[in-house]
Amino acid sequence: MLDQPFDSLVTEAADARPLHPVRPDGLSSMLETLPVAQAAYLKASGFAAKAQELVLLPGPEGVAGAVLGLGADRTPYAFGGLASRLPESSAWYLQPGDYDPAAATLGYCLGTYRYAAFKAADRAPARLVAPPGQAEAISQAGAIAMVRDLINTPANLLGPVELGDIAVGLAARYGVEASVVEGAELDREYPTVAAVGRGSDRRARVVTFRWQGSAATADSPLLSLCGKGVCFDTGGYDLKPSSGMLRMKKDMGGAATVLGLSRIVMEADLPIRLVTRIGCVENSVSGNAMRPLDVIRTRSGLTVEIGNTDAEGRLVLCDLLHDASDESPDLLVDCATLTGAARVAVGPDLPALFCTDDDWAADLLRCGIAAHDPMWRLPLWSGYDDWLKSPIADLNNVSSRPQAGAIVAALFLKRFVSAGIPWAHIDLYAWNDQLRPGRPEGGEAQTLRAIFQAVQERLCPTT
Image (cartoon, rainbow, N blue to C red; front, side, top):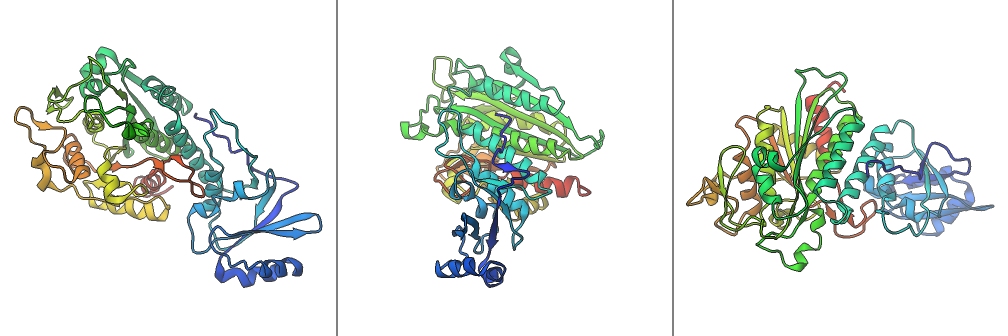
């Protein structure tokens, strides 16, 4: 799963034909560059350069070129449908125009993605000659494909051990050794992760790896990442309905996302220090599973009453966040498919951002817009803090009220982050419900590119 070669992205192709990306206001000028017959054909076809509009241009030997309408779309997804819509196995090179070559490269690669572990492709995609100097776009596409593969893999093939092994392998690829905590050591060091995983016969584990850029020192900024890696979530004794379990293989989307983010940070050799922690568990039902109203002592010493066993993600993260806080990172980020309430609030395409630092929040939001990888900020509203009270423990893992579920979940996590640490909690969906250009139905890497850009700007401004 670590390797996703983009075979349809080539460095050269002798049979490559020109592809003209064009916007409505540049159509007239572009027509003047075409042979008279092709320009006449394009006019007669009614081509208006609307987004996703594609016309093949005729020539003496058949198809001589193509024109892609961009409309007002400046996202990578404007190029996301090319591989499947251009003639099978044909080769193309981009003509200059009003577009970003990096976005075009990324969008094209994202459009070639498919989860192919069990079913062969219906057709060979069209090939694109990569524009020069797009190593970062190709790196990001590879990381996104890895994230999608992880999320799309069925839970019978990707359990806590397998997810942990992926993290260990990723660390090894970039020259660092990961630590794996499981068994009795997990009970001692990460008791809430152990409690969630106890109901499954697939052993829970926490995987941590530490990396440092080649130009970084012991005093370089520290980026700390934590990911929720619930490989399947039944809800535990507070069992989900069958319809609610249909996509629960994606409940490790937060862990997949931080692994993808770690990958592009290490591949870019940013001059920072990086620590990545993922909690790998399965939330199942058995005689060993945690029960409603059980009380668990966390790594921090706080006790938590289990008001609902289906609110397990925050239990997986709270010990990781407390561990990460001890190192006083310059930025602490966690990613998790945490609450349905966030999806109700902002829908599937906008991950919810909660942040203790207004400057970091502003940068993450701005970079999300710039990278076409958006998120939306929700408040850490302290007025709801009392909703987590428990009569017998320091706090409950769920609210006593049915409203503001995403906010209350974030407030729970905030209890485990030391004061003064810039912390961003991202509650994401990690899934595409429908097929769109560059975004196939299934697992999705959300906020990865936005966070990377913000980290580049804030923690390593000279890169």
